[in-house]
Image (tube, rainbow, N blue to C red):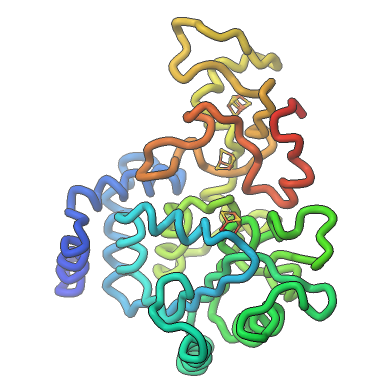
Length: 314
Ligand code: FSX
Ligand code: SF4
Ligand code: F3S
């Protein structure tokens, strides 16, 4: 149903350079990334309209030990970023806000108190746990202190990126700081959206499902099944060159659409659960394997330790 709020949503998107046509294009990509068929595009568009028409949930976005690549991934996909920013209200985000220093600290404190029990906490980055968390601080407070202060007051926590979900690069061996993902560091069960970086479409789909109060089915690693239910290999465009137990590696066949399977170059697609071949990155342009690079397993726990050496068959 079209309401004033819906019109306002489209007007705001237009102002950000996203036409209705663009919006539908992203709905198509989003529908595929949610594992739905093309016939559901209209339904998905309506779900986003509905989510955008409701009260926008306040979001407090924390940064710990990470590279900000996950924020970058959605900000550098401007249209998806615009849609996300039209469905949520970002109250605190260190990369996006103008405030700094004491003012930034005050903003965080005020936002947490004002929206206690209601806000969505998005966390990027791992949390140091050894030596009382001394390996990672913001404004004199350890990541651990900040996380313990803010996260229990959230309505829901999204661990964005492999670092926040499972520790990522900061937790790679020998991990002197005792870095952990948010769940392990705090003993809680956030919704984990791993990936280095996370695909912005998976973030958008999770937000839309949450706003529409849909049940988000998670696997035993806390990942939404709609995005992480199958391996990269299951949907790989090079899979047709994988034949009954043998990875065909001869190059130059006329049939090859994208070239041959990269398994012998170390591809970890068969062990990695993510929807990259369907969702793709950069406005659904490409993903590592399409660009000729083997999957390094970036959305799996401890991938720096378990998936290395990256260029060697496992
Ligand atoms: Fe880690 Fe994300 Fe890799 Fe970077 O938030 S998952 S290093 S892309 O930025 O945390
Ligand atoms: Fe599987 Fe990787 Fe080969 Fe694709 S390139 S078929 S994901 S092993
Ligand atoms: Fe990461 Fe592999 Fe996808 S490296 S981006 S999970 S193809």
